[in-house]
Amino acid sequence: LTISTDIEGKNVWKECFTASDVHLPTHYYFGFSAATGDLSDNHDIISVHTYQLDSSEKRRSEDRRSIIPNAPGAEPEREHTDDPKGSGWSALKIFFLIIFLIIVCVGVGVGAYYYMNNRQYQRTRFY
Image (cartoon, rainbow, N blue to C red; front, side, top):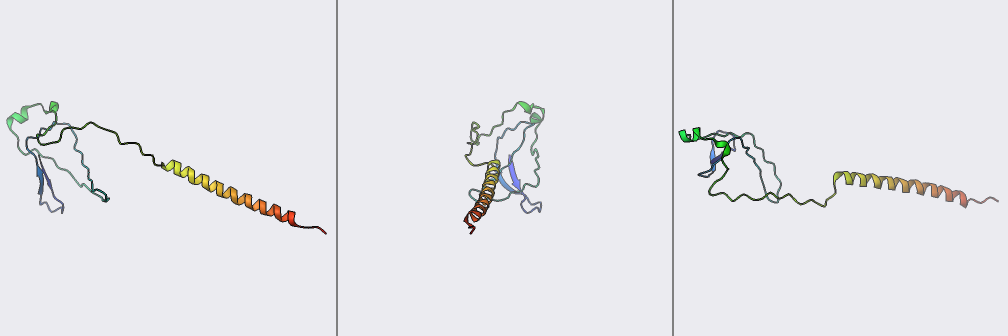
């Protein structure tokens, strides 16, 4: 398995890495991810081309659908673990909290208005 990149788009391919004795079945999917650590960045994959570089008669005749993917230098497969659920607030909760605060502020404003008007009438004296 050889991975090459053409970062500048000039059709000049630079080898990224090579792994030998890699066994891949047919009808599988390739996945790509990028991690930059603490920094956030955009990564664009414009296109992916896959080629079979060497083809022997033995490889052409074998049924590759039943091959288990493996490579001698690869890490062993890990069990899938779900990410822990975050205790953060969802957008819907934040929306309803903001609506509630707006209603409370409007209610306090209207209540203060009526209270002040009511006190104004109580302070007037009739002689």
